[in-house]
Image 1 (spheres, one colour):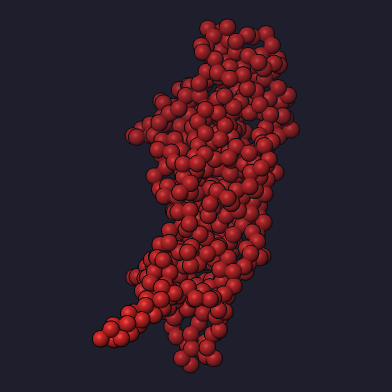
Image 2 (cartoon, one colour):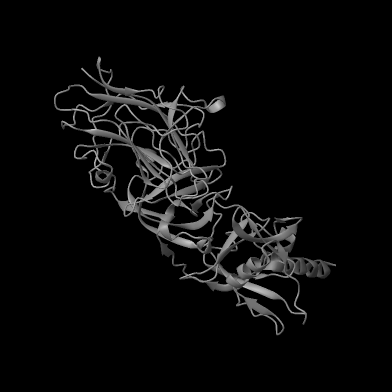
Length: 478
């Protein structure tokens, strides 16, 4: 009897040992034995991601791969470039075709969390396409299980059948791009942007922003990355479920690695990082323009040098008169008089820059005050109010120049600097509210003919660009 019990215990021990060497901590169906290279069967074929994208382009709608007529299967190969370890991706794997100089990428929807423990960054995988469908979701091509006219995620029960882990773990080399290079064929690729920084309104001053920890960040935090070379910008999107959402954005400038994709509504390009380690912002010299930074004053002077509440302007027409220069640098839209009611009401008549659905590749508009003499006037201050009305990646700046010659042609040749103390509504601000600039002190400036400009720069998407409203501008002196 004792011998029989010993045999039972020995068999149980061997069984438990075998079981423990064939499971992963979060999924009992996944072996963790030594990785081996995947070898397709004689009748199987392996295609690349670009072939899958081409198949979708030919059809233009959701379709499902079937088994080959010879009984073999199709497999798609790719390298993992996403990681859900930091919580910024959820139940999806982003793949690109090559470890360096990639040309095609795609997203695979998987109903498993976490995924990084088995499909880590750089891991080569093969996707068995039999029974899987390809569709466009929010402007990004994805693979999953067909569910009506859309896609459902590959279930945990089918995960091992469709996703095969290869032995290779490659070093992923980011594809270096500029924002001007963005296009549909670059989506779902791991890219690098060089010499960039976060917009000064998001990281400087008394209200520096986190990645996605603001009250207004409902699902994603959207922050503006701008290039130092050509003043282009793109949105960094961070999930409010990410582990690093409460970290403050870096002030410095440098490079950033991430996956190029589209926003939830497929309206503009966004960049998504795996973790803050994808940011290498080690240059503490920012590339912001020159500035006139005297801080804020406590009171306004009694002498009004210039003011406008736009009440005499003709609605839905360009802002004119009262010394204003209304200049279109790019696109077809200009600052116009505007009135709106409802939850986003104007302050009577306001000045608005709106390039939504303009069809223009770029929109830049200037609204410039008449010249102000800072030499003979003392205690000069500036104040105004702004509302973003869904700025959606567009920006507005308040600038100054002491060498503009007053002509349209001279605007681009003049030196324009920032006035950083003036608060301008941001993407993260509630769209239905108006925000005061503060009483901006200009007393440390000089010049007998100094101009102040409100410049709007669209986000560069011809079908979807943001809106800003401006009102109650006042320049005073003692």
